[in-house]
Picture 1 (cartoon, rainbow, N blue to C red):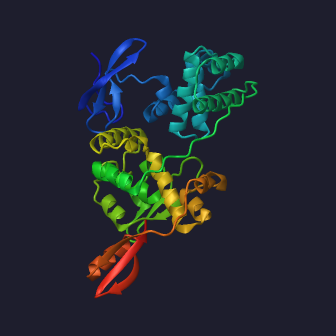
Picture 2 (cartoon, one colour; picture 1 turned 90 degrees about the horizontal axis):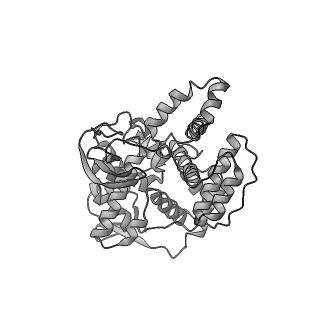
Picture 3 (tube, one colour; picture 1 turned 120 degrees about the vertical axis):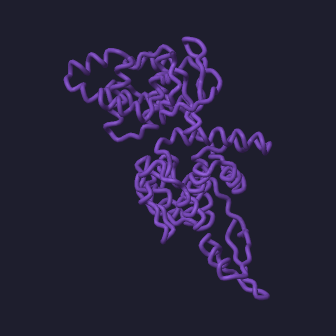
Length: 367
């Protein structure tokens, strides 16, 4: 009988969540009620969607491939070659998400008839199949990685592709997502809004990375070869974090980013329907990072500050925001305070004192 156990958290509390078309026919899909992970009735995961727990198993098996004979035997099979490829990437320190994407793309080429060890057959698939420029660029990039690791001679084809400008939502739309999420997911999104950190970086935050006195969060496990950094956040964000249980101790959130991405995808679909606003469907977790960078650049007009906050080692990665941000005359939110406690609260949340009238203190901060 098929297993109903969640392959992510091993919970047996699952809901049916539609079916999926495969080469073997339709299979039932389930949604874990505890962690939000979607899986099939037999916990079936195809090679190109290897998850964290599978990579751990992969590491154990790959360590056994010590002799050239064993490696050659495995490399003779397409699946074995991809396993070896994944292991090589992991040994070079690439993130699991990056490995998953590359395996998925290479498997697509195989399914379309390409032999990864014969560059001409790959070029034939790339030339005859109808790919978008963005998709073709991804396929070529993944195959470049593959040929370099296995030392296959290939002169990469050129793909004309101009990336689209990232979608930048309004502050109100991001706040609506935070308000519509559950407690831990809302805290996750609030941290993303306040720090501009990547989803994987937030997932790896530990309780020791939070400084409640200085109101700072340290990103000590940066992704994409970025720099570690410490960022100032609001009192509200710190309070939301400290109110959480230590369910994933030593981590604050579920360290598997796939769970959060799955939950977030469902959240934005629900809000798009309830608010009758299709713009929600264009928001991804990485959109919070783009919003943070644009907002910081608009406030400071200093690209170096943005580079340091995002952890970029190269200014070239930060310069994209010079083509997005449109500077305008300063616009402000305003707030008033009558008591010492109200003044303290506004000051901790980043409001700046503006003036005092009729015994009432007026604060403001840029929109």
